[in-house]
Length: 291
Image (cartoon, rainbow, N blue to C red):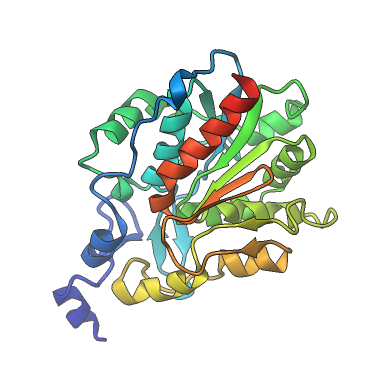
């Protein structure tokens, strides 16, 4: 389809106003970004955690993902997929810290904000400083803070194509994920967040710690179709489900339905549609263990 026809029908990716990349087309935004999230408050039967255990949220500090054509997709962490699970965890009494590979600000996809969702907008306002001034994963690893006395009882890998940039190649991310597995902590991942799991194979240090696990993720088949509606400005250079399955994990969903899955202490969801349920599931598990 010609580029002028795509522009007429709102299928051409839009050049971002403050950078050198592209954001999804009007049609892509209409189909892929909700004006309101699926967040529905839960009271967890009156239970609320009051201790010092925390959630560690691993975010990308990279804004651009290069397509096979060389065009840059302006991405980061998807806002709904980042905030909604955390909103439930905070409701349940758990605090969280944001960490990026070097401590640079976490990148959130501004175009993915559900603009009519007062709960999400309020949460972002209250917690923006955590994303602007995150911890440095390199420092946490260098100081030996990933140990049994760490306050972090769960690692959260939020979605957004930005999870495919930098994180899968970072040796410290691999160290973090192996620590989570070895110390029997919880791991929560949604949509493209599982891409960060590939970091454990960057140094060739034995089999993948989550080999044999089943999880939900955003299907490669839909990523391959996304350029046709202009959600992506080109084809991705690689596909996360294919890479994860090469490491021995099994992706159990072929479509996006809001599916969630629990395999031991790995909690996963397929898309923004899964985030409300995913947040409630991990909150219930942590309340059962620690409240």
